[in-house]
Length: 172
Picture 1 (cartoon, rainbow, N blue to C red):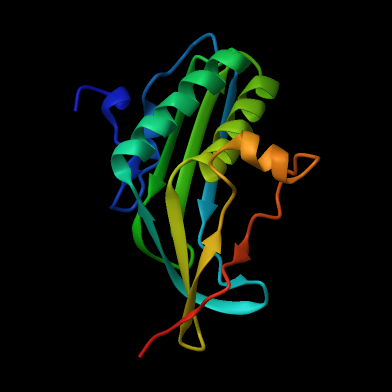
Picture 2 (tube, rainbow, N blue to C red):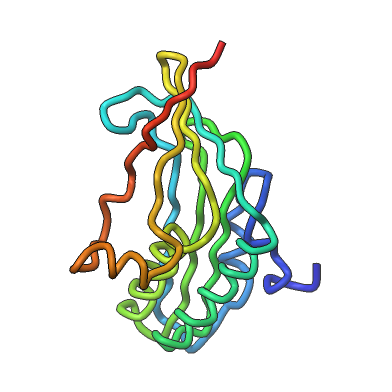
């Protein structure tokens, strides 16, 4: 690895925050925004025991890097990185980190939020939750095509993207 730009955005080991914070100290940046998304123990009033993220890694890597470039340019942010975990995760484990450095906090916060939202909505990463009752379900995300979502609903929405597909699986 030659540096943080070579850091895989899709990782199958526990995510490390330190390399994201240590690299790229930008003396011109007074704002540092950080988001860490962790696995919670419930969803829609169902107890969650664990979950598994899967991804089509080559496309996911490309899309995350494209999102970083576009969002950094839009907000004037010299440093923006997003990493997402795949594989089996336990309650409390980190699934995603986003770090943004900017001249001011407003740009850092805005870039961090947009990068995380776009990653969750556009990148081919799938989440399957495993419940205490022995069942599991894939959590439905947003449409990858923003134009299709806009056609389907007259107004864009900020969240409400965590619905279960119609089927559930029973395990052992």
